[in-house]
Image 1 (cartoon, helix red, strand yellow):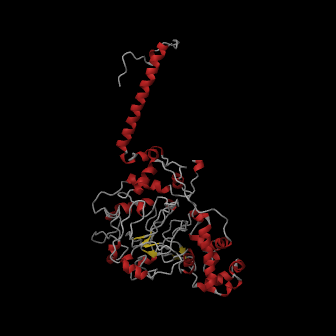
Image 2 (cartoon, one colour):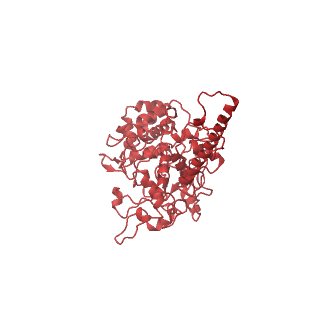
Length: 484
């Protein structure tokens, strides 16, 4: 920019000159020119930023505030569960949840594997936890978190069933009806279009428990967990517990006369604890604060969020829903459906030492009511991503122990499978090696980033992956917006 020939620069102004109109006029012109120069420089900076980071620039007017400042341009009010004192049943359930005397070893409680200080997930990065009568038996699968299950529906197939107290459905009939129905493709931020004829809801990796009460009983009688031989053994421990009198007061004196009823009421109490205690669903992450306009995301976090939601890139939100519901409920970061992802076999698991053993999720072997419904073999429950950045083990077989490896799997499974799977003696890549070949058709190859082919450019760069992980870290609870 050329200055006018008659412009007077600051160094040319006489010191001590009078602030006469004639003297003030060049100063005003000077300020205008420097303002214009500043605007030009600012535009140049933005243009340069756009050339270097085009993917981080706003794509619409509405994106401008959140992209350039990190604030949410459209804050919402999240409808969290009400905070209230625990009921007497929930207090009883809390005592049971933390009581190791209910296990065969006398050393393992629910809280041993579902640590409150680790989002009610495992307190270490072991692929599976140790349990059994002598605390020496390896579990079958990684311990999932018990957090954010308060909205989990009972297990079903296809569209939501609505009433949770309806008569039990015949899953074989539903599965047969779903034969031949094309699996719905996931779209970013929204549930699959109906008919979504896939399993959904339920607890455990295979959905075999439909209520928190059923889920609580599972580890009690699992031989490699709390290892009670049967329900009667659990009842006997309850009869000799410090809270047997409390159970009589809450459930009636005759509850101790029926072992099945006694155990049922005890598991109900544990379920109430998980449902009522806010610690299981606090919604105190940085992302929650950002949704409500109380936090700013960094440029890396914002870019990660955009990739997370992009149905042509990471497409994480296709299964890990990231938007609040229409009635203001915070996102759970799961659609509670089941997917066959084809993760590589974890050869560290004891049961996998047998080359003929396969954990096929919904269709067995630990779930036994859907073994004939082979279109679901290899499908496992999609877990919440809340607090996942603090986990030390991932997927149903615990094959990965950090988010970078998880993201590399999604990014490279189809484009560079040699980097994901083992090879045989001839060098052939053993893709999908943790599922029998006859069920490989169940594995998702339609949804991004799995829609890439061998040799294609991966959906994400390493920088993209780092930014996605940065965003996922904003899902960890415990963010204090007042101190940031």
